[in-house]
Image (cartoon, rainbow, N blue to C red):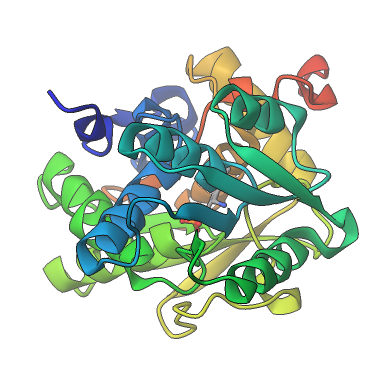
Length: 301
Ligand code: PMP
């Protein structure tokens, strides 16, 4: 087996205890930490890099450069090592310590950007560097690269359809670049237009749901399609933390904060749905990426 084949085809896990709070509604989640570098972003990174190689834009001697809240950067770093390209990642300085350490483990160079400008600041800095020397850099530009959402159109969406035997009724997830939401929702709606695509949003512009964007107050990704979500569910950071704790303590799933936000939103949505509904969401990455966070030390009420 090729190491790149360790991306995609992740398990779909039923969240039995959390679903039992609902009236005949089942919540299921894609365990994306099973991917090669440990997050959902492996899918997009692999698609963007392979497309770069195929089109001739990524060729020997070039350096991969992009902005990331961490997970895409780690995916580029591991794939860059496998494919033989150096990697430079622009990352907001307040990104978690674990992600910076993992990037160092992979041998990637990191440029820290103004934390007050969050992912927008990292994006603008990476853009300026890439555009200043296009012969040196390959800039996948994950916020504006169609290969990003198409990785989910060709992968995640197909897998969810097959893993639920075509019975999925709702797909719900948060958005960073919106690649996961866009590609998966588009594919599922092609299979069955009645499947609802629900987008999770942090309840306020300043939030701790790392890796996700508050769309109304930040730069919109180029391929973000405002007409795609059938509805939005808001989650505040404390509720996301509490659900992240529940996921390891009740379901045995050690996952990151955006996964907690997704499951909390799926639970809130599930309370409004009729029996028989099947809600699928995404566990984007692993809890090990957030070990230094304080919220693990708290208990839920
Ligand atoms: N959760 C985490 C932890 C992430 O790092 C990201 C990507 N920034 C997402 C969710 C959202 O993924 P996407 O870019 O496909 O919208």
